[in-house]
Length: 83
Image (cartoon, rainbow, N blue to C red; front, side, top):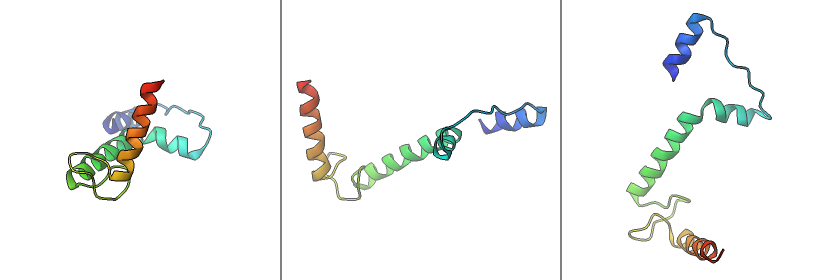
């Protein structure tokens, strides 16, 4: 993607001017691929180290959550099955 942007600038192609409601949305949309890659790497690293993916506590063996978040996930799944 960076290479395409570079070539577009060299050719003099105008950048699309999209309106965003706030600067955070603007940042998110312009950096979406990089942010997604960072989140995936962080998730993978936490799983590998045995740290809960939602906080920084130790995980339940064989599961990616700490006891607190594992209980929350169980409650969420039960609620989802009832609906």
